[in-house]
Length: 479
Image 1 (cartoon, helix red, strand yellow):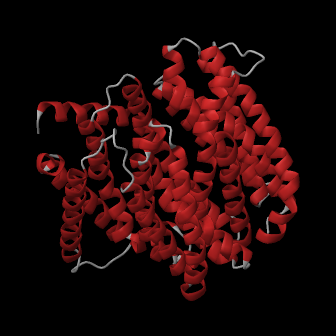
Image 2 (tube, rainbow, N blue to C red; image 1 turned 135 degrees about the horizontal axis):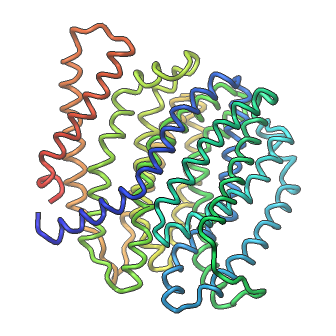
Image 3 (cartoon, one colour; image 1 turned 120 degrees about the horizontal axis):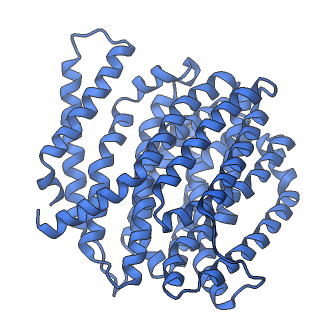
């Protein structure tokens, strides 16, 4: 590889590695927590918790997510102008207004949600209470990202995971249902918010005003994101909502656990690219230094590092489920490949769609999101009616494939930022290598009697050989 490309890969890889420890902590926590939930909570309580969690995600999407993304997108711009006090003052008062709207929405839509999705009043109230500390945490995390304080970010993740697990065991002894889990989350998140605030010693002065110019820029950027992210949320959660509305609680739990297992293990790894790269890309863009090879190399490295992990869930889903989940969750093994690859595609799409954020044309992504979400709704109803659990998996995967393709075809005349041929070459070379290695592993284990130890050995040998081959031929794969 040429020297400049090698430098790109080295810089991208180093940047990603600074946030990788925090992602690994999330994965470790998931490996512990998900089996605990499936053993401690019955099917209905598990379904209530999963629906409450998705309601929380939707509330955060509509309230603080777009505001915190605006912090990350425009921090560098107002830092260069030396007007961060004015910027954060506008952000603060906008957040106060939004949270008031959230509480009004709670009283407006409470009865509808309780009736349609079998969520009780206490669970829903706890979910609404979670919105504020979750929003504050996201806001603080974006500041840590903008200031490149990866160590404090990782420490806060570690402390939250430990606090949540300890509180889970303590509180569920007294409240052994979804309420106990949600209460543990509230206490843990509030404690970590306080820790981060005390640690970073925010030295920005909050003024009693909102700057109209800043507010307009934030709203122009952020309001389309509400509809876009709500559309993405709907695509990812249609199946759970449909099953819960039909009172098929086991199917809700199976779908939710499939998503948690694949999402909480794969997503922390795939999102680290967006997480680590976005501030750097924004800074390069603001300083007029964003180059096509750099962005192309990010997506090539994304495929290089993550396709082997996704392949484990595709090729060894039955082994994974038998190792960590109860027998009544066996259908998870059929859903994991669809969900795992769907998550990979979803985050791949987010990297591609950085173009909308840089050009402040997020309304284009919004229109595409609305269109695909509308199609996905009717497709999910039909597929789930015909194929139940498998229909839900096919609906999610198909929607993500379409999302990637429609966004690939949107281009800006003055913004040529990707070499698609190089990315496709990397994708197919790595995927084909994985298929060959999987076939060799299957042949290798034919003489052995399969048990948990053999299953673990197959997975470890597969992933080791996969990365060894990728590393050996990295120059050809990434060139």
